[in-house]
Length: 295
Image (cartoon, rainbow, N blue to C red; front, side, top):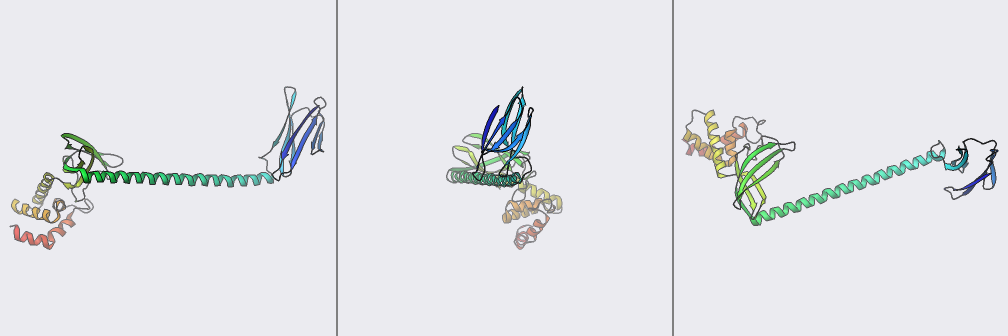
């Protein structure tokens, strides 16, 4: 006769000693709990499972026949639809939500910490770069070699001479092509601008797209005069040169951009267009100088 016993302790701390007597030949079965018989069955010679409630927990006593031998098991059924299991599922869902909230909060904290660290690190690098450029910087002229459209914007490839060598560099501009510079002219290949680099460390540079070289300003001047001559063929080249000179004196490269884009709509160029041109030439400073100097 086979004899087995198990001990189960409920959540309240109550102990249950569960045991069985099972005749392997007769199949007679006796199940007791805390020395009290709770179940009797006969001719149990095949696999069979018996439910047993201990407090409000559903337990299952299993007799399994395998290879002409009996094996015995005692397990808690956590899947059956019982009040205890329904309560357990609610608690587990609550704990799962709390776990998700915890790890979600931790993820947010880590992400914020990482972002703050990267921003701080970037600010430190930018501050160090600006300090080096301010204290050890030199200026020269950079030439725009190529403009390459990318998914992130326009890649500006340029070169300049530093330390006796040609230095090649690139800058990602957030807008696509064409790039309209701060004063209204479009950025084109072969344009030239001021660039500041650190002495003995030309890899640290600052391309100043808002500061065209003297040669580039002259190119803008020629473009502005040509456009004005096309739109006002009745004016002499000397008169047009005088007007362009006044525009540059009053607004710098932006004045030349106003002349060049004087027939463009604000939608085509939000910086320099027919409206900015009219404001310039109709303004008192421009009219007074044009009347006194251009004839």
